[in-house]
Image (cartoon, rainbow, N blue to C red; front, side):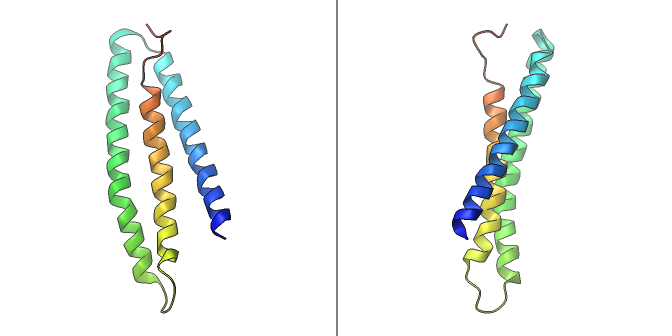
Length: 107
């Protein structure tokens, strides 16, 4: 079951990355000058917020699942949901970071 979960996590993280990256690039592509720089600052702020949420939410989910496990269940049952949310949020942080990088064709 672990291999199936890893594939699912990678697939969902890839979708989160693609949607975040392309939406940010479309938003940036329609703006020039100061509006573009302001939007970049806003995207960077969102990137930091999502990163902070990832750092807080991952252990919170782990401990919430750990406390709710029935007697005798392995700890790995609490690790999987935490890894899942961490991978998705990390993909969003990476996508937003790459989206604001200046391309050679950017003005």
